[in-house]
Image (cartoon, rainbow, N blue to C red; front, side, top):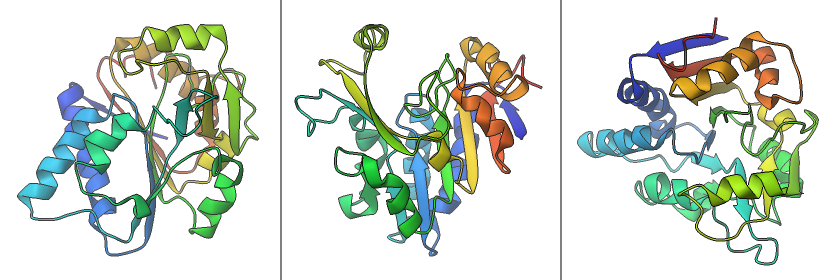
Length: 236
């Protein structure tokens, strides 16, 4: 594991953008998975700026796999989670739907096979929750999961209700499991703010436990934690 601590969120975002750009502009076949959370939003803005400034665009040889999705179980086609990254990254960079595998009721049961058929994930950006969740692998989720669907408990629904990101009712999620994500060739875990300091230390310096899903990333051969100084204060 490698830790890169930047002075602040802006510096972290600049660094993240520079890490992602080569994977986007390559002429080689590349399979990527980018987190849809709020932490990378500034990096996605910078990527757009860099691509425009260099008169470049995302290569047609690049394919994206959605990490997780949230929606109302009675309306499974009305996905919510992906709207966050859809506007800031995919639409902003004119990426066609054909270059994206969305995680849906149809695809989540076979996401492991779909990724393997595509040649495996080359690169993934993952956020980490304050409870140690990765994608929608929540505390207690078995490490053996591939693609799966779970109905949300009252605690999780209450958390979503307090978020500015989700304005409508949501009661279930689908996610790529940790077993599948661990097969990614290179992983970048991003975090910012002092509120993430303790969980980063627990996840990467503590014991392996399903109660902290990110803890299994200690055993990945090529994982980098990219964070600001506030989030890095406890990790070794």
